Image 1 (cartoon, rainbow, N blue to C red):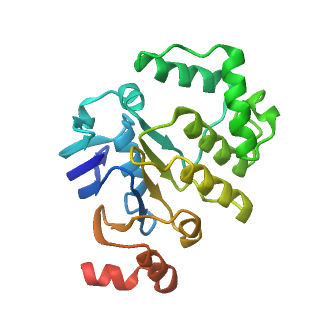
Image 2: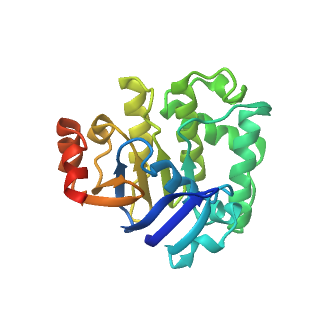
Image 3: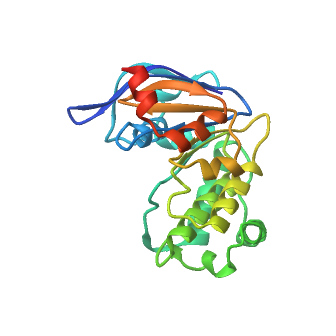
Length: 249
């Protein structure tokens, strides 16, 4: 699914990623953990094609295709999805129209017929019900006046509708209460299949209790310094990063 080799990237003159090597096979969920400022969000932005980050070396292959050679919209059409740590508000943009436009753009790219308003609303309401979201969230402007938890659920709603092949969740669990956390995890778990993979950036073991990853990676100082199974997240929750950082020094 995703193969990253020697990836380096910077913002302006500041190097952030300093040689990322990571493979996420088909059907697997991998968690990325690490101290603040280690490059976790930058990795997500680079994979999704955010243009203020400059790739300075390495390669990224997604389903056999050079991901770095694709425009952001082409990456989205190919099945790459990024859930933001802090979703932005879009005043004046109706949430239902936004979601339908995004979904139909993906369907066009795949040669599929577009959904009309009635077809889309039937699909969207089924997903909002599953995510315990009120129907009126579809009528509101995108993220405007949404609580932190509502913004994160709206990101998961986008993911549920777009059905990506690779979902990158950038601290989607931050600021969520226990119930909302489980709903976000359930949204990801509902998509798990042999053709779906996810890269989940998180600081907390509690998300991984609901969303059990195949692998956990520690990213620090712009590179992955340790990898392991789900038990690694429990070790980090108990002991912090000091020992792992010292061992990698």
